[in-house]
Image (cartoon, rainbow, N blue to C red; front, top):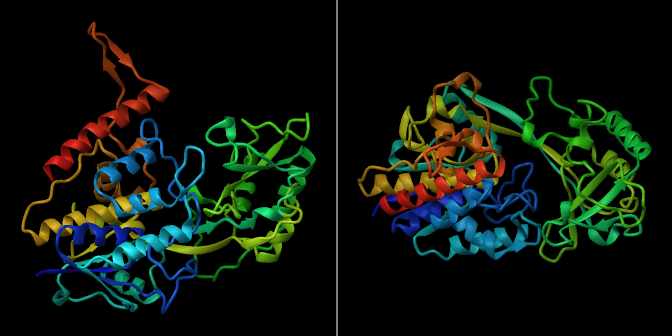
Length: 447
């Protein structure tokens, strides 16, 4: 029986392994944890998440990432099944107990009769004698393997920096100043804790952010942040009011402690199932730990906050997939090697899972000697894949979250009386989702 080797047991590698094993094919997962950890990872289990709400909106009727959730569920995703089983309250978002989620994924993979683990660091590109190989080492690929990949692809790669937000113990939050409320009262009112700032407090806070000591970089490192995950202090550098139109916007909230409307609000989201930890929403940072404690305790309600984890920063690396990979994610120069997950240039845990699922499906097709059927570009799976393999604008290739902007455009619809009706707002988003779910149903039936 054929065996597929998967390097890396993050979300993409775990999902690919599950899809392949469920099709009756042997899998060996090569994972360097727990012998070695990347700078951002601490948990020895598979599919480790950095923050609680990593899977984002679960609305599959109006939201692109929610649509991707639903497509993955219908495709038999291990990651989505485990996320649903370990979810915690977060309004309309899909948040999970991070440790419980990783533990469950590990249990599922470890108990599968066709999946084996080899706990070792792979430092060179496997040769052809390995057979089919999927590299799913993520954006934090170990230095040795990253250099081996770069040597093979002639340094056709990009890199950026990704920052993570701090987590505080909920019982250290001062509820004489803070309060529970979801924005516009969506979901359960206990999903978010809110800390208000007056205009004077906000301006002082931003002033201290700008003066704070930051993590230092080597002279040879070029910092190129991904806009979807900018450090809070980098956002502040763009203008004094930037944060009140971003993570500290005060809209949709009412402070029960005061009749005065807050000028800015910091929100904290549930980070574990027991709700003993809260993640400071949008506060990813590269500040030094002492500065984080000093500055974040300036926020009303967090003056006595105890930190379970400070924010941090790490370097992410990805390849120029449109140049290097074929339509089934195989490396053109070494077709027995495929890539999956964030190293391909998709951005986000859900997107990484999606590319892992597709890499697994393509490996199954190769093992069974049948032609792979690509998911339609009208689906979230197909749109994400097309972003990675479309070579029409290589120079501007950047990491991308799933969004309706990468789907084939829907401008309107023809009504019953034959007139064209232009779609806008929620109606247009609903049309994208309906079309995608119709098309994913057909793809799943035929693949």
